[in-house]
Image (cartoon, rainbow, N blue to C red; front, top):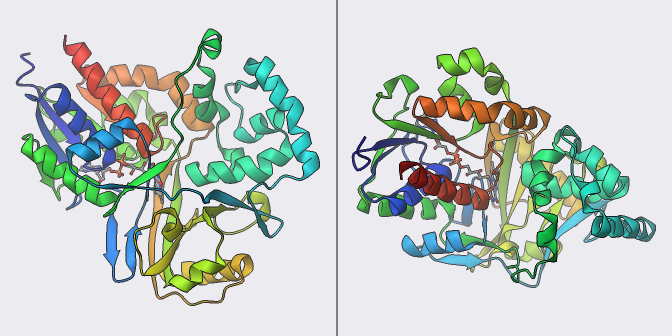
Length: 422
Ligand SMILES: Cc1cc2nc3c(=O)[nH]c(=O)nc-3n(C[C@H](O)[C@H](O)[C@H](O)COP(=O)(O)OP(=O)(O)OC[C@H]3O[C@@H](n4cnc5c(N)ncnc54)[C@H](O)[C@@H]3O)c2cc1C
């Protein structure tokens, strides 16, 4: 086929679909691309709501800084803001108190021999194939570190607890480096920093849509795309959540007959409740990006993001976003739980000026053993079989959770697409 006429349909105008279209067009401007989304607007999970009290981000409020996101933001002319410097990243709840380091002195000392083992026998830290993070952490870093710190920190990223997470899925990429490269002089690493579009995450997606339209990418919004609409001569790339992909492929014979296990991989319920208070209220909360709650503290939330402290947007009000695995039925029930928590943690009885709840039943993939086994044993062949039918898949359940990893994967996919064509 002459690839100037190659027709690609991207299903999903969320961050994955938009960034993939961006890199595909960069690599080959003559590609014919149509992006479909059943929603009326672009952005997928990334919806930003401007309220009289300030900005509400329904899902991600930031992305890890990288050359890719900076270049993309520049191309689509979106101003980015850096997370505040000089404040603590996170506090951990520990026996009812907020601490930046939740381990006792004796527990901290016990980490020393483990650090030495890491230096001299790094391979002994490598996760075993079917080990949970709880097992891996207890084996390598000790139970206190795993329960008080690792559990809370990973809950802030994966919205899951250590006993449900697969160590191999989460940590194996850190052990893929060849031992020799450890002794090579390395480039100075950039500090991990979060950045965000000044006008919100969805603004970046809207500007990206405008940019793609100038590159002759078509958008069909407000209409679901079903797999049986695909013609034989075109390629379809499904860019969305695990739950969405399972619905998309549920009647496709290849998946139904050969990869049925894909259809039952678990996803998690997550809710994000944002509450606005008077600016004064921020004095009661710690000088940090947020507070994380380990499971052993038995709180009903995974953590709270102190939005106004993360990004200085000249807000006139103060806002916090509380994250939970609870699929709350309404704002009232989420809010009354949060007010209880605020009294317990911050000794504050203040009533919010405004609240916003976004709750999903199945929104993030569970990075647990089932997904680990699937990606290890089944995905390589399923990917090849789908490709024979000109069907491709991109999304946060394929080992790239988080926007910074999704954008890198979009770039890699577009580049390997080019290589295959040569
Ligand atoms: C509460 C929360 C907080 C988060 N915080 C962060 C954070 O701070 N930093 C970070 O990096 N990441 C964060 N994430 C993760 C990040 O937001 C997601 O991984 C990312 O937005 C997923 O983008 P996506 O394009 O893959 O999927 P989606 O955003 O789900 O987009 C998929 C799109 O496909 C469309 N679609 C699906 N099926 C069809 C079909 N058949 N036909 C037409 N359209 C279809 C859907 O309508 C949707 O618009 C967070 C997630 C949540 C839930």
